[in-house]
Image (cartoon, rainbow, N blue to C red; front, side):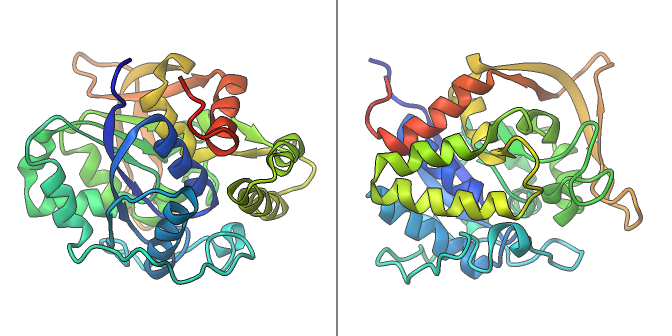
Length: 305
């Protein structure tokens, strides 16, 4: 049996980040978590990451990252994720402690031997700070999988997705760095929808982790238009796009991000033409299979082959 792949997860938990962490723990060897402000404050994203690991019975080093974007004022999405980041849940103080090393140094350390894989499910601030500290780290990252951006749509403005809008400068720096990158944007993640049937499947499992996530998922759904068929499970797509690429299709591209302060702020512009296409965009997902994998990670941990 093949050994599980290793990677570093840079995240801002966040309800869908919680699902992503469980997927990472189930289908990979999660080496490191670095946290960043985004869905909620850095204090909450770090506390949430530690608590989710405790629910999973896992020990993974967690390193606190940037508490604000590179230049623009920080914003959060508490209206989507709740004040704590996990719906109405009040995250308890975890027993596991965060590491004394900050996220920037943790990323540099992780990439020191080369061929490092990073999955990022929040603003790219920590990645940009690592690149600023040592631009050569780009050569030691074999691939960066990022949930963010929008090829044809936004969810904060008509043009910009939340993670890109939160720190457009960090996205611009990362895209220009030479890192091989795959973007899982809103056009992709809106193919993977969780609705009432997924809540039911979680509740029927009757485990602590499944009930916790069912409650969080119901809050997540209520924060959106209840008339829609389901809510996008954004962040697990980036994790599973790395770990189960056979359930996705990809297209080579070049991506740039607008770091202006006007209406174009955070807009990701994707070009599929050119002789040297450094990036990729995930185009389609096998929705049913991806949904089943996410639920398996929660309901039947250890059952994956």
